[in-house]
Amino acid sequence: MWWLLGLVAALQLYFVRELLAAFALFALAFAVIGGFIGGLYLLQKAWSSAVVRVADSQHPAMNALRNGLDAVGDFARRPLRRPGSAAAR
Image 1: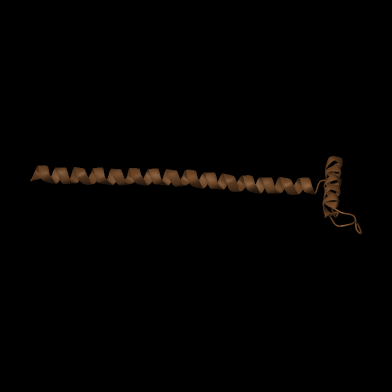
Image 2: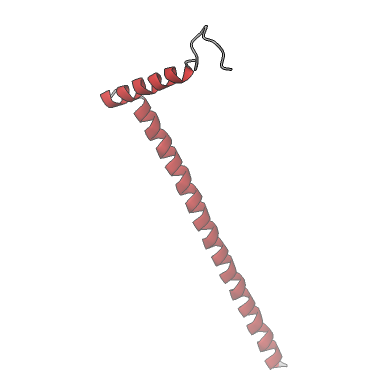
């Protein structure tokens, strides 16, 4: 009888250790996933802040880039044919 009670108590302790180990592994996995998602969020916010700073910059290179992009946009809005020209047959 004492051997049986000792065996039951040992199995209970083993089961509790197994549950605690599983909980620790799951907690570690969720912490890693949470850290990864938090890192991506911080990278996105930093990128957004950098883009806004560069867009608001008055550096001559940025002004030249803006003028170039405006010229490309104007060129893209032009019609392919001149007004009044004959239609393609």
